[in-house]
Length: 174
Image (cartoon, rainbow, N blue to C red):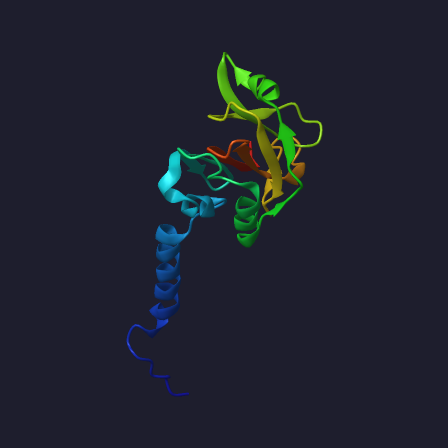
């Protein structure tokens, strides 16, 4: 049987294509909840993203000088346009927020599972009455001890006067 002639380098085409896609994703993919970095980006006060192969955490804090800058309806629409499904928000009083602290440091407690007492504390800059929306993100949380999986919710917290906003998301193991 005659040998099939192939152009030089043709066997590398799939590999080169895969590498190109992966390199482009490495520089362009935003990761879980990464779309929030494009929301009102000129008003981002502080943010953190620690993403790994088995889990990650992202939080973003915004601040504006003018009251009413951040409102629930456009923020939830942005979340839903990016694949999150948000529940009806609940009111959080300033008194309740003041209880979200460790060693007098304001935190946002993200609790995993239905009755799981473990939590991951994230910095919180909102101290006045606020609205809190819990959103289904499509990601999961996994308890490393039991492998039980629960939804990895994203949380949108907007200070009632509309001058401050924060988003929190933690997914994967841990």
